[in-house]
Length: 183
Image (cartoon, rainbow, N blue to C red; front, side, top):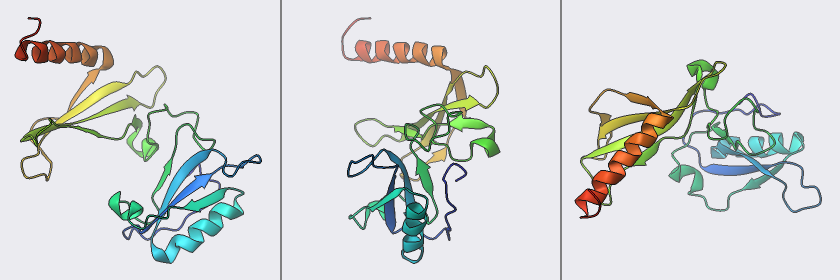
């Protein structure tokens, strides 16, 4: 990732190691948690060495399933938007992966499902174009979740946040009505 002070090799194999990257400690055990680096067994030592050579602290997650459970590949880096490595041009909610290529900031996808495994679920995220004055918008895709292999069943939808807030109010009112509350 461009805002890391070092280059990280990655082979795109499934990650088996999760490494937390901390800024200077300032006398504390760890400083600010700035990023998480995912690596395979072959590139793990290289990732730790590169982190330390850049003057950062590397802490390997002791849970060997942490990287695998996240479904990450070797070379994947997540930079926390509140850490010292964050790019100030990104909104705090942006995951900072591929923004320039897409020409938009995107938050991580949130899956909206009911208490029970619903046949239709929604993938919701924030999106903001990379241009002056652009406002964030809510993006929602309805997917078929019956077989838990999500695939779109409708067109991708985007709406301004004020419209999303109005939709939220309408949904809350419907839920209240369904529960016998206000109508």
